[in-house]
Length: 285
Image: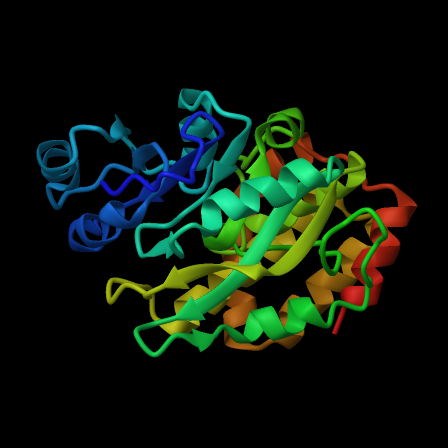
């Protein structure tokens, strides 16, 4: 693992959740400039043994079952740092930028989560979601370093451990993909700021071991529906269900996928304050 001299090692931990992406991990781990906690979601491709052999400095938490996004919460519990970077197995921070992001967080005390600029692939193309974040209709609050957000991309997120822990981290109901929304909403409801900062960069080289596009979109709709059930007022839940139904086959698959998790979602239901829901409506397409 590369250790950059500018990174205060006690300040930040990279928490990586992965499943059956051994080659991606072995390629990305040397780029990390801070201690790494790898949470393996019950891989069957030899990931755990390969990482332990090649990178004995990495803390490996091997799960017996696939815990989805909850793996990041389990990994965070193994960390002992005021900040957490949720790098994926196919992403890493640009040299020196993780340390710079920590300094941004320290300079803005209400900032609970920072979303970095994302460059995709060897061509380093700007991820379109960054253009959307930069133009956030929520504007830039005076005590934040960039446009305000009510969502984020996990692989490019640096979060304050205090804030992450206080809102419960990622949950066992909303898994992958689309797991970020519920956490973002809870951070905002607790008074933390979320901001896009394009002065720091994360590189994302998407793994070849990915779900098909249709399956991923269905998963996103499943997460949207479950998040709405957990946090939206009743009228907004109805609206989200209608949006999913109107999305065609991927929306229908998302609704079907959400159905078995409805009881668990309702047990965790806590309606957002009106101020946060106003932001949700402002960001609605």
